[in-house]
Amino acid sequence: MRLATAEINLTALATNLARIKQIAPNSKVMAVLKANAYGHGLVTIAQHLQGADAFAVARIDEALALRAGGLTKPIVLLEGFFEASDLPILLANNFETIIHDEHQLAALEQANLDAPIATWLKIDTGMHRLGIEPEQLEQFYSRLKATQNAKQDVRLMTHFPCADDTKNNKTLSQIQHFSKLVGDKIEQICLANSAGIIAWPDSHGDWIRPGLMLYGVSPMLDSVGSDHGLSAVMSLKTRVIAKRSIPAGERVGYGGRWQSQEATQLAVVAMGYGDGYPRHAQEGTPVVINGKRYGIVGSVSMDMITVDIGAENDSVQVGDEVEMWGENLPVEKVAQCAGTIPYELLCNVTPRVSYQYIKDKK
Image (cartoon, rainbow, N blue to C red; front, side):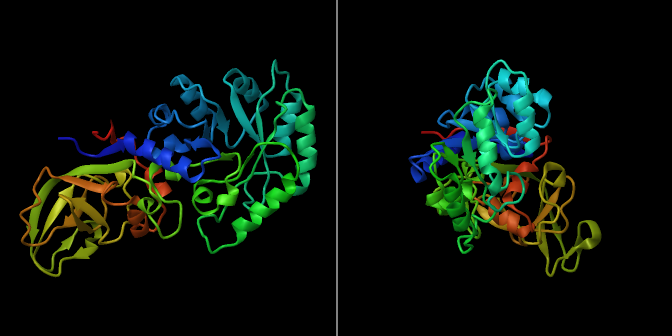
């Protein structure tokens, strides 16, 4: 019996990429694959995104794993490099780097390289995480143009902190500020993350950086992927491993957190925080068994969760499949019940979970 399984639908992945291109038809796509492709499997996902123009990762080891997996597309390091000794590795593997501070720029200028590296100059327009100050743009831009260690086409980018909220004018202000800063520079630009792609068309630019939406999940507040024409790529599934009846008044699980108000039946499912399911999921957080939603009760354990299926339920049996989130239950809804965000749930799936890659039957 296959228990905890992350079923990864590669047809849905392709559908999402097509939808992204439909939304931003004039932009190149930099597919964001950091954190093991948001928990979906770095190399396999990349191998099935041949329609993307480039890949983006956070760390150099992620980029090296893509090259080891046979991927030849451009790869952008979203955090840049951390040591001068990284630069020969970037050059040898044709990695492109973000430049976001003086330390990186100086290291690049002083390096002894056989050929130039492609660079992306990141400007902080309001995220206040990585990026040069707006008033530093002209200096950094001129220095990158002058050094023989950087390719002449210096691409320009920024990042949005609030693009998921269409009622917040900060994103519009950032777009306008970035446009004014760039001025008449004839360079490729990249502003839009997933939320920017969906909600802020003026941010599409030459490049877009879809991350979460590639995997069929909404980056916007108070919506799910299907609201934007996206399909869930990951379905986290397991099985019912026990079924038992309890009388009214009994307490269930560690700490007796939940008490039955009437006689009922519980389905015990093989899933827990040891698999990456959120330990703080509230009572009533839904799961799907045989096409019907039921609520979890009691504390989430390391390996098991109990589900209240009702007193007279004969349709749920040991061995039945349970969907914890996925095609029939948006991960966004589970995240709300756990007081977190879907990014965290997807990235927290543990190595104990088996991965199964599938394609829809035509």
